[in-house]
Every structure is written in C-alpha cells, then in structure tokens.
Image (tube, rainbow, N blue to C red; front, top):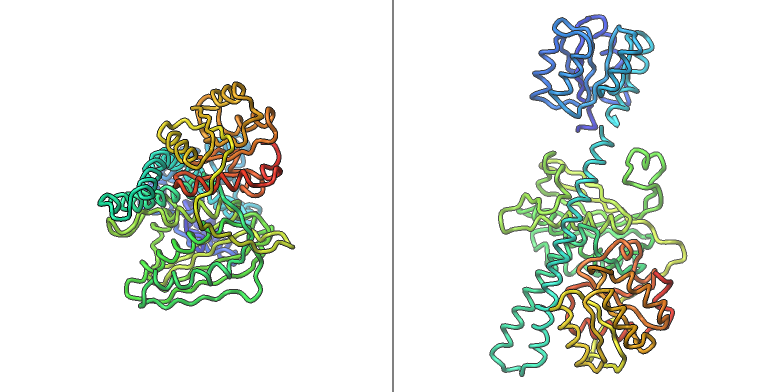
Length: 521
C-alpha cells in the first residue's frame, strides 16, 4: 500500500456529488489523494480487478446497481480494500447491515458527510495498515516456530558430529593421515551450526547472553573485518556519535547483525559505491508509537547502515524479512540475512526500519532500547589454556542418545562422576536413588518428553538447593526466552557445542558462587 499518495476509487454517478468530494479531498493538504472516478459499478469492478487501490468510496444507487449489491460485488472483486459507503439513503437498518457486511463506514451525503469524509478515509487506511501488520506478524511468528523446530533437530545432530570430530583431533598424533579429514568435518559442522544459529535468531528461540556495551565500540572493533568483507571498490565510512547511550545486548549477535547488513549492502553495489555506518540516540514519542504498534515509545540507540546501491522494488520490500527469500543468484545467498537480523533485533526488544528506492540505494536503521542510566560497559573474558578438570558428581539428563554419550565421555575424561537419564522423570528418580545431596551439578536439556529441563530444575532445587544447574538445548522454551541469561542467574550452553566449550562451561558453573543460579524457576 502506498502511504504517500492514497489511491482512491470514487464510484458515483451524480456530478454535483463528485465535485464536492473532489473539493473535499483536495482541501485535505495533510494527506495526498490520487482520485479515480467512475459512474458505473461495472467500470469500478474492472478497475478493482486490474489495479490496486487503498480505499473505495462507493455510492449505493448507481445506474447498474442498487443497494448493498454494489458493496458485496466490490468486496468480492478486491478483498481487503476498505470501502466507505457514500449514499443519499439515510436508513439506520441499511447502515447497520452495510457495516455488518464489511463496509468501513456509512456516510449520508450532505455537509456533515463531507466534513467526516477525510477522517473516515484515514481510519480506513489505518487508513488496513494495522490489519496488514497483524497478518505479517502472525506469518512471521508461524515461520519462526517452524525455523526453531528445524534448528533444534539439526543442532542435536551436529553436537555429536562436531564433538567426536574434535575429540579425534585431540587424541590423534599431529602426523596422522586422518587428522585433516576430521578437521574438515569440524569446519563444515561449524558452517552448519552458523546456519542453525541464523534460524534460531530469526525464530527468536536463541538465548541471549546480555552485556552492556557501546555500539560505537562494536563498529570500531569490526572495522578491519568489515573492510575485508566489502572489498576495495567500496568506500567504508563510519560515523560514531560523539555522545551515545549504552545498550544491553548479546555482542556476538549484534556483530552478526552488522555483518549481515554489510554483506547485503556490498551485494547491492556490484560496481562499487559507498557504505556508511553510523550511530545515534533517538526518542520515540507516544504519537509515533500509536501509529506503529510494533514500536514502543521510549529511548533508543540507533545503528544505521546505508549504501549507494541498486535499491529495492516495492515487491522486494514486502518480503524482506521472510526466511530464505533472496534476490541473489542461486548459490550466492541463503536468504537468511535480513530475517536473522529481524529475529535478533526483535528478541532484544528493538525494531528495524528500512527505506529503499530502486536505483537510489538502501537505508537500514536498527533501533535498540537504551540501557538504564548508571550501566557500565562489560567485556567478554578470553578462554585459553588446558581443559579444566574436576571430581564432582554431575547428573546428565538428555533425551538424545548420541548427545548424551558424547557429553558423558567428555566429562568422564575430565575426572567427573556421571549419572545419566533420558528425560526429566528418569532424572528425578536417579537423583532420589543416588541421594540428591551428593549431586553437585544438574546438566539438563531444556526440551524433553515427559518432563522438561526447567521443571526438573525446579524439583531438583527443592531436593538439593546447593546443586548448580546448567541448561543446554538446540533451542529454548519460553521460560528461558523471557530472561537474559545473566539477569536470571540461569546458565545456558547452546547446541551444538564442542567438548572444550562443554568442559569450560561446566567448570565455570561449578566454580561460580552459590547465588549464581539466581531465584528458583
């Protein structure tokens, strides 16, 4: 729908009424109307069949149609287009029936109708826009659930592939002929893991590890990587704001957003051009929020990525955030770039605004909620050295046998005592039989049959408040999604993970203070 010019179809056979309506719409300077007039229903139906209109102004008394028949036929020809009835028939029964049949409004011709006309059209468009946003949101949510489920299953397969490949490289001598094969398996498994992370980011089924950072630091740290990524024929300009609020985000995911947007911009400039990345602060007012339901009012930090590329058609813009949609040649893109960005930003409580015109480049603006005043930037500690060992007892609850066997093998190799179960019910029985006070760590998958990991953790905490909990999953359920990991005190390890990542995370959780697991779930 074109929001700059409202395409209006007027179906009216009285010349005086046509003139009045034309004058009324012309006087509405705040809104631009593009008016098309016909005086027969048959002509209107032909136009509705081949052209797009934002609203129809329909008389019920026409040379070739009388009464609500005109409304019914117009709706059938162009479903979803708002129809405002303009008629001389001042009949409450007909008016009620017209609204019940789907008319946006029923106006009786006269001075009052002319005064209400512009407002009625505006409401109809909202003038339809809100309905489209709702349908789009529902469509994206359905696609997200599907993507999350697919990623969950793939991650369960990738975990043992990646894990055993790394174990093999750690155990074989440096000159072993199979070493290069195992390394290739790791590289390609990691590529597949990147693909599933994109699916999870789109579906908002990925746990975010929130840290307070400055987006200025993010773009400055990524500068060298971006320059290698976009190539020498594209000029890169970074414009960090001199004063910028902080944001509470997952730094890795924000870097992924920046890289995806930069790659899209690069591909839109095959003959070179200019890529501009800048940051800023902005306040979204209540009036703006009312016009855009997906945009809450408040204080935001913006990340803007602009290019001088080929731009996009209106048709392309309607599919931008759909997963696997791409305008690139086969094999040149997965179609997950913008959908991944969409999922990441929405999961962080933000939103994306994109403006583009064919032949005149594209401007992508990311809005992220500003962190609370008094927040200070956090930095990610590095992980180096030998894999840590331990002697504690760990209850491992995992419904995928291949993943369970891998995890048990890795942790036994590091000196831990392992108890195993295939679901929450079985895990609880094993804990009671062994003596829950002797269990130092519950390592559990989140999504399992019979009893999931979050319920198991609740029951385990009632039996043994001192036990630590480490969740793992190919994706996560709403219990964890609604909390950033550090905020809630929950510890989480995303599948697929490597043996080294597993060993380091287990040791870190066991060594954390007793309060690190936070409030009961």
